[in-house]
Each structure stands twice: as structure tokens, then as C-alpha cells.
Length: 271
Ligand SMILES: NC(=O)c1ccc[n+]([C@@H]2O[C@H](COP(=O)([O-])OP(=O)(O)OC[C@H]3O[C@@H](n4cnc5c(N)ncnc54)[C@H](OP(=O)(O)O)[C@@H]3O)[C@@H](O)[C@H]2O)c1
Image (tube, rainbow, N blue to C red; front, top):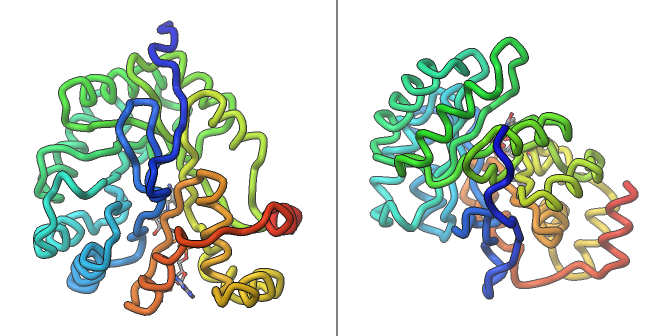
């Protein structure tokens, strides 16, 4: 068993758009989700997003779009170092050698020699977590993943990962949106130096019609989608909405120059 080797600590950068991870590096609080984006459409959306200021792209081996994501990054002309790229190893490839092989495939498809964050996509009880994490540690220590993390992990599984990993486990990417907020998990992660990354931050689009969010947004000339995302980032939760239109990309980007009041935050918490 390995003890924790870092002190954790989350602090906001000055511009409010990125947060410092337990590794000491920054992670943009807003990213672009790419699940279900494919081929030329995916490449186009990634390129557009980067050109309008996004600096964080979320993909996974399972999404079968890493080649398109990689092309989008290349075509944007933005320096690779300026873009935070997350990918994930699927739950059927968590044996040491499978991780190594699938990760190399990810790098090849993304046309890069490192990712910023490498996640265990889902836990798999059939494979010892220690074995998976030994591969993740090795990848991190070799510099081919600047950070490692987990996804869809419970409190108990997060604790196991922290105990077993030799390098900081920097995030737990979980389903998190208005109406689906696991406060205990969030608090536990934060107290132990893991940032929570919210997937499905717009509840697959359902949040955009929520009456309370519409009402709260109207006061500041913001949409319900923007309120849903602001509620997350204001809590220092990373949000990775997927959007495929230019209008949605622009709308989702506008979550840093305004704030929700404490009362509004609590009202949304109760939904
Ligand atoms: N770790 C995991 O197990 C896991 C699981 C699921 C998802 N994820 C990640 O999380 C990302 C986000 O989750 P998600 O894609 O499932 O759901 P989501 O981001 O909550 O919702 C995406 C939907 O919302 C719509 N939308 C986006 N912006 C909008 C806006 N401003 N107004 C109205 N509608 C808007 C999109 O439409 P358009 O496409 O038409 O713009 C799309 O239909 C994924 O893409 C993926 O990268 C991870």
C-alpha cells in the first residue's frame, strides 16, 4: 500500500478559468465533451471550439473519435501545449499490458506524444485496481500523461485509488448536473485532493428548458444552459459540455464573467 505523496489543495487561478490540480498543473474549468461527435463533424467542432477559446477537450478510446479530435487540434493551429487533452482507458482493457497497448493507440490516434489527463473510464471489479494503477503510474512517471485520474468511481473506490497509486489521482469524472449532484462524493473528492469533473453537465440537454434555471438566468440575461454550467464552475467543478453548433459552443463559453448569488446557488442545489 502506498501512502499519499502529495498535499492536494485546489486553488483558482486569477482568471477564474482554470484550477490547480494536486499535481501542481492547471486544468481549464470548462472543456468540450466529444461523446457522439464523429469524423469530419468532430474535427470541425474541435477546431472551432479551440479557435473560439476552448482549451480543454475530453475524449476516450470508447468514443472512437480520437483521430478526429487529433485532427481538429492540429487544424486549429493552437500549440499542443496550450490544449488540455483528456482521454480514457475502457473498462475491458484494465490489465497492465492492455492499458499500455490501448494508451499507445490513444496517443497514435490523437497524434500526440502525451495527454494531459488519463482516466480509468469505469471501474472493473474483475481486474485488481493495483494492477491498473501500476500501469497508470508508469505512464505518468514517463511523462506521457501529465496527470492520471478516475471516472465513475464511488467514495470507496476513490479511497482505494488514492491508497494504491504512487502518483496523485487528480480527478474523478462523474455524472453531475442540476438535479443529479452527489454532495458527499464531491466533498470527499475535494477534501482528498481530487477535482470533480462533471460529465453530462447539461443533463444531455434537458437542463436548457428547466424553469428555475430559465428564471434565474433571465435576471442576468443568461440562458438556462449558462446557469447550469455556471453553477458547476462556481463550485470549482470542471464542466465538459458537448456541443456541436457554433451557437451552443459560444453560449457555453460565457460562464466566467458573471456570478450566481449564494441564494441562487442554494436554490439550484435544492432542485
Ligand atoms: N466518463 C464518462 O463515463 C462519461 C459519460 C458520458 C459523457 N462523458 C463526457 O461528458 C461530455 C458531456 O456529456 P454529454 O455529451 O453526454 O451531455 P451534455 O453535455 O450534458 O449534453 C449534450 C447535449 O446538450 C446540447 N447542448 C449543448 N449546449 C447547449 C446549449 N447551450 N443549449 C442547448 N443545448 C445544448 C447538445 O446539443 P448539440 O450537440 O446540438 O450542440 C447535446 O445534445 C461527453 O461528451 C463526454 O465527453 C463522460
